[in-house]
Length: 487
Image 1 (tube, rainbow, N blue to C red):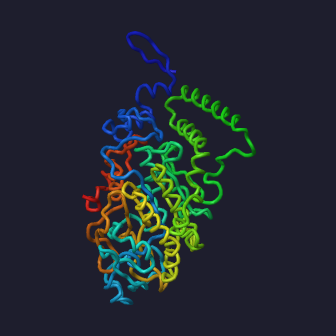
Image 2: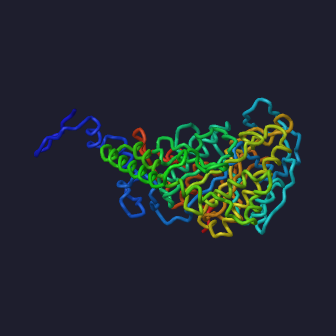
Image 3: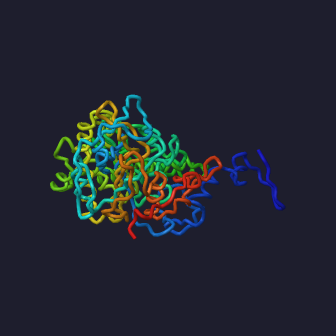
């Protein structure tokens, strides 16, 4: 035990209480630094240092343009010169050596330029170029913001995925969805703020690490919802339980939790466990109801491709994503099919067939989601992000494939105040490197936070004595890309 003295009395403290009272406990530091200090207020305008580490809705630094984000993550590495970024010079010089140095990942690359096997065509009044494998997304050209000048920091899948999801290449950091829920909470207190929809057959590259809350409290991590069977596994009690008995049990549990929390007021992990248990009880009704797609019209189900075995699985996840943001969920993450592999856009060989096959599974449902949100008046305040972790090389691998490329890739954004019908940035004549109006992954994160009403430099959490941020602007130089946004 330790003793602190004042002129009036002496009070005995445990070692833990001494650290708390003297302001040296990291939990207290994190709470004091919540969202960058007192400038950011809660929905009730309580000073930020008094905010709880929970999912209560909170206001941002300024009026938001969007309320939620749906990330349609296409892991494996989308081939930009085959889908979004036509390169006539690549076609013209097909079979010739690349004139400069090219960074490769695999060992079986040849320094031979490879033209696209697909035709490109302009779409919409904007004249946006798309490859032939994604006609449904192409039909929405005037609703899309295409960024051709993205670049990342690593050309290995797990590291690049970490970069896209957490802002850094190494593991153990909170995912973007966790940061957003930490900063803003969520509007529906009967559902998690961050929900993950994956192929029920298994996990894509990096598995659950992709939606981890890292060292943020566990209440902010992604929650998996299933698209087969019950939405949330292990949520309902086994067997038949009398509803009145169940209600009394839950009330007793709540009372016990409250008493335990009173004895340990600053334990964030305890808070997270209690909140998760209480949320699970509320979800027993809410989750089943919100994900009951049988209530959707025949036309809606056909639009998402639920009647087609090729598109049904991914289409159901996209439809669920719409229903979730409709109910106030803050961040929804949708993962692609596990066919042809757990990183389905990784076209190291057989590019002509494999790219077409995975495109056929996700194109119609992705476009249906954007169209559906727009028709329901939800696209204005929902950002849809369609992206992989990096791009592909303009040279050949295995004679008919492309290797990883961190120096350039393309992505699509829709809704939430992003400029519709706009193409941003450019790559070199072969599509190898972003050269004009370059956008880093931290720049993208900063811009997304801006649309949700947050200053990315002021969204922080103290961990191991350092004020951590999603964008880490002092290191990355992250900036809001105003050119992507509506004026």
